[in-house]
Image (cartoon, rainbow, N blue to C red; front, side, top):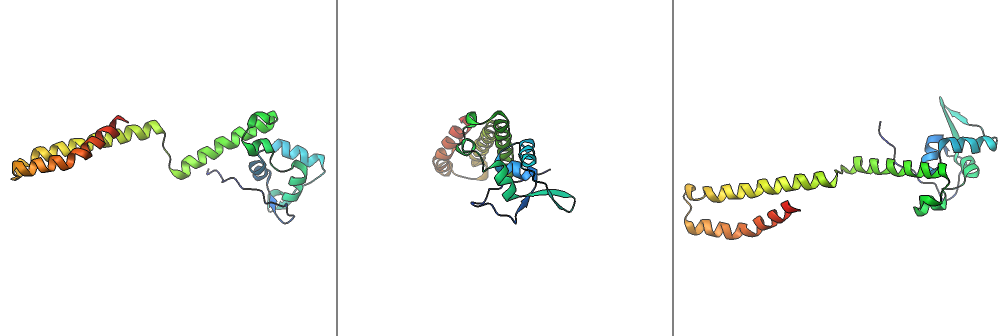
Length: 162
């Protein structure tokens, strides 16, 4: 199941936008149960779109309010426990989605793969230089190739070390 991208609240609440509790939780950073409780306290019932219950964004906005300033500032310590839990969950989901969409791999794995590639490239350069005399190249040509490939070899060795 693909995670949805986090949606942002419009500057002003509108009455014609209807969203589910899950979407409201994603947008506001609050727990779904908290939003449901606040909507019940205001006697706000859902509207049905097909088989799905949806609420007006305006009703949710008035019941819950905009995302808390602490969550917007990135300081979860200032949040209530339920909101803090929702904030951490939202951050974990956001990071997982970013990793999946960007095709990110862990730094250690990236370094290991790059070191392996650099090692293979150095070995290939050594093999090519060793085979040049067998292909009819003069010692002068081999030495010129060594001079031109020396900076590349040095860069690859540094890259392999990290």
